[in-house]
Structures are given as structure tokens and as C-alpha cells.
Length: 359
Ligand code: SF4
Image 1 (cartoon, protein in one colour):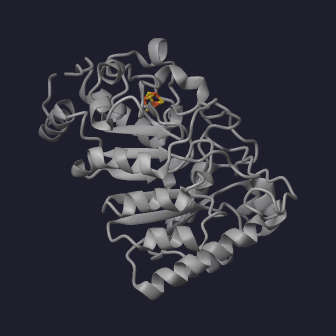
Image 2 (cartoon, rainbow, N blue to C red):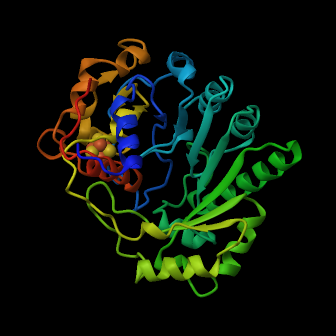
């Protein structure tokens, strides 16, 4: 590599020498389904995780013990499922918090009741909970998330048309309890912008949310991993985000993610560098190189199952290291990175025109 830029050269060396057995991030997808949500903008819309016996909270805890010494960020999320539909959702959160690991939880919030709130607030390590809300009233919420009406008494127990009220009540109660305890946990509300929810009075619509969260984040939805884009994105995305960023500049609780309007779908990188620093574990213990591919159509990228060996061992397995050498298009068939992983792949590819080896 001809590196005339000292900073680039330093970053390249860091990435190249990084021990794949010390993941920076472990993403858990413990959810079984998505209740009555069928969001058209879901990243893995219509796809299912692989079937299989669901990991218990105890099994998840044992896997975390294997890597806790490396202090990875534990993200609890789902590409096509709601994480809190796991039968022991609060115990899964506790498995992370009781080990003093950093936690990032992404949830719709419908099932985020007292038990989950207690589990989050019991820990001291850095923690954020992001509620994907995307709407300011119950009708828009139901429409944007494709929620089937009815269903009261089944599953989680709330009728589809009442989801919005339940979610907002859960966030409000969580924020109040967090304030009461003086917890450093950060509560975030994520709003994806669509034609239906970004009228001229956006500031007034957002205001109540700044009373029940530490941060309200505005962005535009990414293209789904099947390449599909919903038809109700607001027009002139880039201009809109720029306008909102200027309007809310300096606001202590509102952030606008300005770079979210268009997917890059970069074709320059031939190897996936991102996978060296992370692992995703689905509800049945299947291990994947990134969250975007942790669904059945990408089963060919699952390099092991958590029940086969200790996690620390699987992270250094030849199956995993072999993926580092694969071509993203012809071998992995997964040029569907989200904007974060794509940004990392692009940046490292620029530093390394000849992909570095796994060793
Ligand atoms: S989708 Fe992107 S980040 Fe995920 S494995 Fe493929 S190349 Fe890597």
C-alpha cells in the first residue's frame, strides 16, 4: 500500500492487525416475530430468520461470558423481528446489564413494560434505548407500520389500533422512572420521515417527545435489503434534511441525520471488512457476519451455530476467517450493507486497494 497520509496509514494498520476474536460489537436478534407490525420500510421486509430452537437467556449469558473481557458493545435488535418478542426478553436484557456490558437496545416499545425497564435501569454501564416511533398520532402510526387492527387478548394483548398509545405510555413511564433514579441510560426516539408525518408543523409535533426522551432523531428510511424503496418517502430528501438540520441546529434534544437520504450502494469494495469487527447472533444461535444478512435468504453466510462451541472459539474459526477472503458479489452475494457498514467498507477499501488477508 502506498500510504502518504500518516493518519490513513495508521488506521489501515489498526484495521489489518485487529484481532477478529475481539469483536467491537455483538448484535443479538432474539425476537421471534413482530407482533402485528408489518412495516413496509422494514430492512428485511417479508423475510424470516432461520427456524430453530430459540436460545434461552442463560445460553445468551454464557456466550457473553466468553467475550465480556473484550468489552464489546451489545446491540439487541432485529432486522425483521422485534427483539422483545423473545419469551424471556427482560432476562436477555439482564444478561447484558448484569455483566457490566454496554447495551444498545432498538425496539418498537410495545413490549417495553415495567419488567424490561427495571432490567435496563438495574445496570450502570453505558446504555441507550432507541424507540422506533416514526409517527405523532395513532392513525398515522398504524398506517406507517402496516399494523393489522384487532388482536386484543392475543400475543402481547393490545389491539393493533391501540399500539401507538401503549408505546408512548411505555416510553413516558420509562423516562419518568429513569429520571427518578438519576440513571445515565439514554432514551432516544427515532423518527423516520415519510410524506404522512413531515408536515409544516414538524417542530410542534416533535415537542412532546422531547419531554419524554433525551434525544429525538430524524432521518430518512434506507432502501430495504431486497433493494425495494417505499413510495411514501418525502420529496427532495437531501434538501429536506438540510432544511431540518438548520431549523433544529443547537437544539439540545433534536438531531437530524443529514447523510441518510440516498443509499450509496457502492460497488468499489470487493471484500467485506466490516465483518472483522462484529458478529450477529439470531434467535436460534446462528452466527452471521452482519445484522443485514441474519435472515433465511442469506443462510449461506451463517458460519456457525452458538451451540457448537464457545463463542470465543467460533469467532476465530476457519469458517469465519474464510469469509473475510470472499468476494462480496460472486461468493457472499450480499451487497446490501446498511449505511453504517457500507461506510466502513468504503473507507477501508480506499485504504487498501489489494484486500488484506485474514491472518
Ligand atoms: S451486507 Fe455488507 S456488511 Fe453485511 S456481510 Fe455483506 S458486505 Fe458485509
